[in-house]
Picture 1 (cartoon, rainbow, N blue to C red):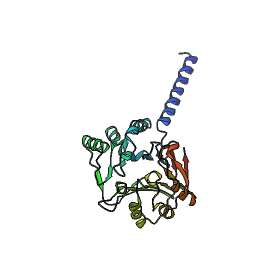
Picture 2 (picture 1 turned 45 degrees about the vertical axis):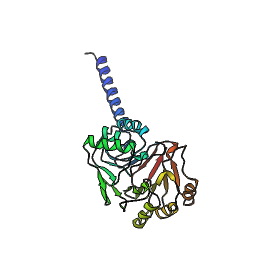
Picture 3 (picture 1 turned 90 degrees about the horizontal axis):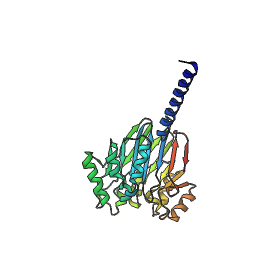
Picture 4 (picture 1 turned 60 degrees about the horizontal axis):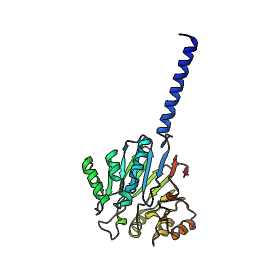
Length: 278
């Protein structure tokens, strides 16, 4: 074998190794740094779908609308994600469980959490069919639970009552705490549920996912005043934007606002600093 041939083979091997490493990094680009918490809010119209990455473990809060489910499923697969540690459905409205059947049918769900009530809708029927087919037993949450994944604490807080006039008030509220930073996900909580939350909440949050797509109610200002977020995320669409009064309240408290109607939002944090990109 000539020296020139040996060099050629060596160059081919090096190039193949480089391509393999690059492809691996691209495939897993959702959560690169070992100490990084990543939260992705999908641009899914006036709907919630949030993916949280902790090392190589993933949590999804809500699944958006039925029409977005293939897009979200494709994204998860493109990132090499084949399972979710937790799938949390805050409540049973179609803009929160629309893609649940797709996620349950195509990914391994280690823990499925929902509030304890039923909803009459096509999306809810599809969800029930999916959990029956997949043999998953959802946890019908009645008591607050707290779980830890590495250094990240996740508090999952159910509604306090058995019945509410508005289905939005069944919303599960999720807190994520990572070192010095904290994140609050309010589902679609309206006045009654926000009042409940503020009775026991005694802390401030770095980021709040605003309840009910930025709709204003009599508790909106109390919520912001008592949680004092630096940033807000509003899951809105260009056709159904946040209420002007909500924006005025957030501006009054110097909160920087991001809207999913302008595209996907990605938050990265090492527990000390936060970066937000869109």
